[in-house]
Amino acid sequence: MSEKGHDHDHDHDHAHDEIAESGGPGYYEIMETAVRELLVAKGLIGADEIRRQIEVLDSRTPALGSRVVARAWTDPAFKARLLANGRSACEELGISFYDDTQLIALENTEKVHNLIVCTLCSCYPRPLLGLPPDWYKLKPYRARAVSEPRAVLAEFGTQIPDDVEIRVSDSTAMVRFLVVPKRPEGTDGYNEEQLAALVTRDSMIGVIPATAPDARSAP
Image (cartoon, rainbow, N blue to C red; front, side):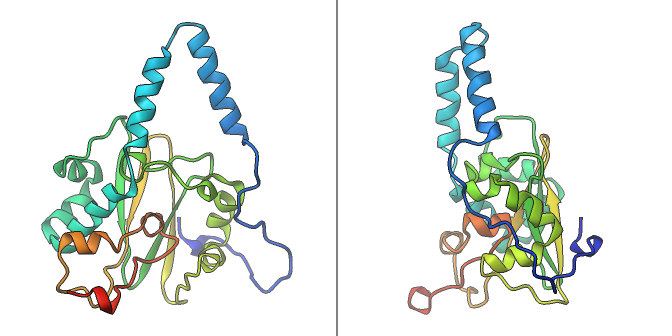
């Protein structure tokens, strides 16, 4: 969905819900705990199975997604495959998916900036980025990312020019998204490892750009 599909005037003075953690377990966290404990009590799943799955989840970090983006920046053929089928392209790099979700890679360009959200809960490309940040799961972000994406991005310090379209993609139980941020200027001589260091979790969600290179660390 595009921000152009939302008629939202910002010249008003009503208060916005701050994108910040409110403290205490949320509804879905409480439900997850209750369902997990019930499944264990009924003998439908073992505590060891849960532990092993948690270990798999804990092993996933944004560094995996950073590798994917860095490869896309340096290999046009790989980028084309990534944009055509995100999951299979990631599997080329040895990144396994432990569920049946599909991955759609969204490329930021001079004319389009992508932002991902899950309006219903907290669906997120965990095989690539690990656990989502707390703010991603909170209602203010989930609601406002759709209704006023420019204001949300501004709160993260990201100013998008008026002539750049913001596209908000809503994750689902079966479809997840990965933002491929624009490659920073001044990185022509960087190798994949150096480029990956510029790709942060938040840039792959779309709330900030990739990190600009520090002149002191340039090759």
